[in-house]
Length: 156
Length: 258
Image (tube, rainbow over all chains, first blue to last red; front, side, top):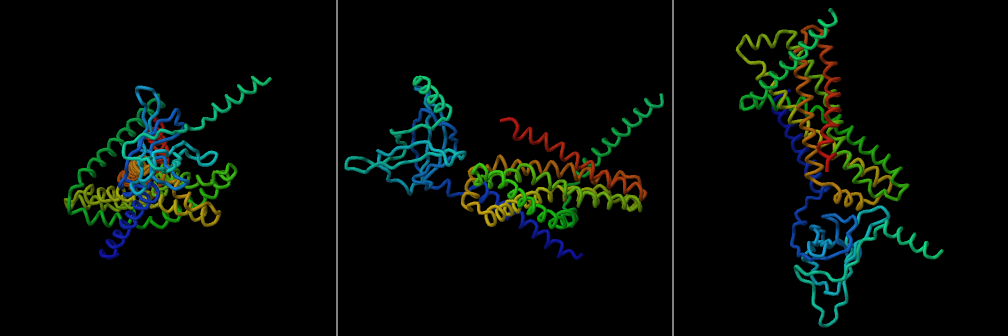
């Protein structure tokens, strides 16, 4: 086995591995640079965020416009505050827009559904750092069942 | 009395072997900085790494395909077949990639290392090296050890990558899972630092253990044909057991405690 061929094959091996790492990083784990692209931040207070996690998607009609950046608890009124980072190219949502926490499918992931409001005169667009006023909490199955049982009990 | 004597003798010989193994590993590790050894190491990367590529890639492809097929039949009952992507990717990256690669590596490359070094010892090549004032630890053991340590994580990454592509082949192209959801749910579930990097760390640990056992068994074998055959068997058995046992410990440390 001559030396040149050995080194050539090891080189091919190394290149293959670099290809695999790139595939795993970019395609599988989605370490894309575009994620750190130009974004602006909006805040939303919910009563209950259910199973929402950091990096969950923010969608308008199914189109991803941003991601959940972080979730923390407001120390004054003890409600969860969700920080949304929205891509800069979608920067013309009116202030009357609302957000709700939705689930994709029956067992799917939770995501933030964003409903753009009406743009009437005198309504400004959302800016970096704004709080969304109109929010709907996650649907918690246990609460629903509890309510259902409670209502049945009253009926009888 | 004889039984107690046997227990004592066995214990002492086991500890002595562990000590010799540690000394050999130490010698091999110390031998790293030699520039002279780099071509030797590249040659060994070819022998243990490149020549294992075919079996690793073929097994990875088929394991990914089988997992997609089996996972699909269960997930489709719950209408959750879109979660096929993360299922295949996570099981490959976290468990199957490092573990199956290590097991195959032990069988394909570890046994060869043991037999090679064992035969060198039996034919007194190691002693002749010492006669020529060449340290066999530097010349023979160290390049093979480093080559194993370099090759196995690379093989494990290739295994996972081709397994995920195999899962795509069966899940998307054959069974009709949506290609977009296969990738996008995978992307939102798989975390690079937590899953990919931990898989690489696992693989590095397995590489150390398997190569260490393989080289030591060869280096320490009884220099007869029977001794070499026994050492080769022990390499495969011990390193497989060590990999499976260590995998549980590593998984518990990495993913068990939130």
